[in-house]
Image 1 (tube, rainbow, N blue to C red):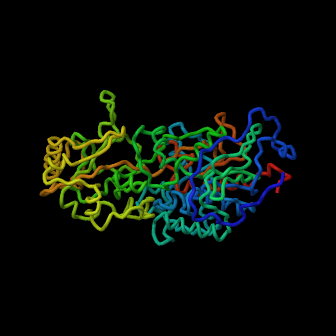
Image 2: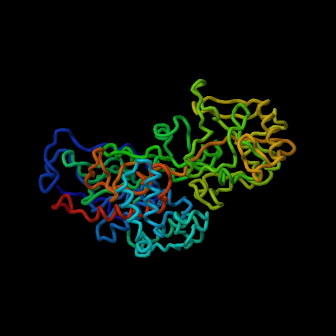
Image 3: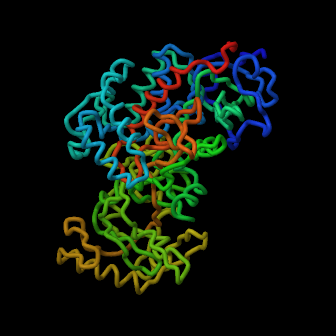
Length: 550
């Protein structure tokens, strides 16, 4: 079979826009001939290939970049297909940028904590291998031209030394966008062929041997079949911006707006299911700070507070439609898997008791500065909405008020009647309980003045009594840093079937099928680069499935 080489320019698709489809299994029941040697040229299910390479990498974030760099260094041809219209770096490009769980941690201690935190959901051999793979990552970063300033502690958040050891400071700040800029510079230096606006919609699989032979991709020039002589690496992120998948794997109806890349819509899940892969850790959604619902809906990503426990000043409370507090407003939520009062459910009333929920605050807080400054945790510019400036909040809160995102009342009773929201079932809420709100604020003022919160234990240094009217409220929402679920993989980053056997020539890396089984122990940025490197090396080491192919 002759191959048409029609995609031969590096980055030829930059800047275009793409709407892709769903991944399906390529294969016809009843085929009996293996895909080896000359026999494959006669197979009815075999597509006409538009292009041939050695390794196809699906997704160009930290994991995809590491996979492509590893395969490139190994001397094989690589094509990277990225769904987004620009090389934004996936979630890595809008993350905190800090590398914790680094190789300077005690490997035995690290393995023990990973095993314990997985609660039986991650194979101990996979954990052991992934920790061992991390040992020489500092040298690897240097070898491919990504300089990392390794430090004894994470300077940004002073995390426990057992999980630290790495810190990005060589890119003008501890932010993922700078780490990604350094990574992209390294990829360009190595001549990595990455193509944007290319959404992989199908893995081409031999129906007999189950080998993955290539991909079908939707591109601005039409659908293309790209042959992968050695293997395919799925590094296409999670499902953080797919409300339907969130409802399937997490809380039905509860939208958690993404901090990470908005193109992470769970495409890899469909691709993996289509070729018979096992899934794991699908529950693994990493919570983050509360955000502002209407602004987040407009942005299509979380417009988030700096951190739930970082909202200032302190004369504010969270209330439900009954006007009642239901949680400690100073409790952090990032990478937190504890039960969330926000999603408490009443079977008797068939509803989420505390959704919708609102932050109520006074004039002094309204005047103190904009509720959103485009930053995420620890005062740095991360989150997709912050890095890409998806909305203009303004220099203060007046624009948000005029937009209808913030509600106002000259009294608490008037404010209660002006508040609007939407339940997870899509039912409009017009006004909340005025008496409940008035009592809540009065009680909170007493707690703030006495320095003790007997209801929820909010710290006295995080409380201040409400001042004079008018008063304000804004509907809040939940957000997620990322998701951890995806195709199950072993310690060599091979995607496996439900029976535990590897699907030939298919690898995965990054948060798509993260090793974190339940508790967040293996930092996602470091996992992305480590697993990407392992997957890229693994694919590059394979023999060509078509010895007669070009």
